[in-house]
Length: 458
Image (cartoon, rainbow, N blue to C red; front, side, top):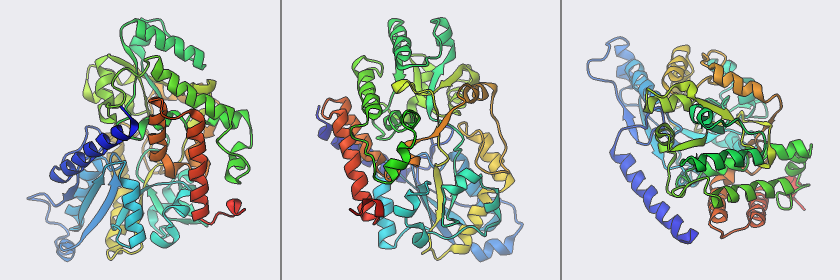
C-alpha cells in the first residue's frame, strides 16, 4: 500500500476521531483527553463566593490543545475552577496531526482561543507562534517565579515569560521494557545497537514482539530520530551551533543517516511486528501489560500507566534505557513540552490569568502529580516529586546528557508531523535516509527564510 493511500486512510480515521471528540466528554485513562468538554459547576456545589460566581456566570474561556496535552486530571480541576470562580472552561481538543496547522490558522487570522496549547522552545515560540505579538507576557504573575529555570528559558523571549508548562518535562523519552520478561530470557540492558538487536532477536525467538510502535498517530515513531540524535553532537561537538548558524546540514551527516537506516532495519527485521502502521499510542500500556510486546518508547510515568491498565502489573516492573541507535549512550533531555499560552487578543484576559494561577497552585500541582501516572515532577518549585527507585536508577545510569535536537536545533520541532510522514515513507521503502534528511534541510531553509533568519540570508 502506498504512503499516499495510508495517509488518506489516516485522515479519514482522524476525522472520525474529531467528530467523536465533539460528541463525547471522556478522556483516556491516566491522562490523554481525547474529547472536547465544557466544564460547569456540579449540581449542589458549595455556595461560597456566590457573588463572585454570579459576576462570572456569563464568562466562558476557551482552551484549544492537541490530544494528550490536557489530561483528565486537568479537566477535573477545571470543574473545581468553575465551582470556585463561576468561570466556565471550553476545552477544544484537536487530533495531533491537525493541530499545528489549525493553531497557525487561528493565530494568523486573529481568531484564536483565549488559551492555546503549544510546544515550548525558545526558537519555536518566537518564529512559529510570534508570542511577542500573539501571547501575553506572564512574567509578572505570582506563579511565574516558581517555574523551573530551564523550562522557563524555553518559554521566554528577550527575558519575558510567555507560557506556562502543563506537563512533566523531566521525563525522558526512552525504551520502556518489561523487566520480568528480560529476566526470564536472561537479557540485559543493551549499550549498543548490536546489543539491542541481540535483545530483540531473543524476544522474537521467544514468540513475542520486541517493540510496540504506533505509526497511526503520526508522531510517536518520530521519537526514534531526534531523541538519540544527541549522540551526533557528542560525536561532533559544536554541530548544534553549526546547524543553527546554517553552517552544517542534516543531509550528509553519517550519524543521522545511520540512525534512519537502523530505524528502517528494525522494521525489516520484524522488531515492530506486523501492525505497527495501524497501532495507536493510546493502546501502548494495554499491549505492554498483555506481555505480547516487551518494549516501547515512553517516558518515566509509563509504569504507572501499565499498572492502571492491569493492577497486578507492578509499576516497577517497567524499566528504562536510552534508545541505543548509532550506539547512543547519552541521556536525551528536553526542557520543552506542551505549554499553555494566553492569547493576546482575548477579551477575557483576567479570567485567563485566574485559570493559569489556579493551575499553578500547590494544590493543583499536587492533584495533577497524584492523578496523572506519567507525571513525576512538574517543572515548578512548588510541585511534589514521586520518583521511584527504578526511575532514579535510570537517570543515574547515564552521567552524560544532551538536549534533544527538536529543541536544541532551530526549525526541527515545527516539522515534526512532516518528519513523521517522511519516516513512514522510509519504512515503506518509498524514501531513502538521504531523501528524508534532504527534506528536513529544505523545510528548515523554508522556515528560516519565512522567519527572516539572518543565517539563511545568503
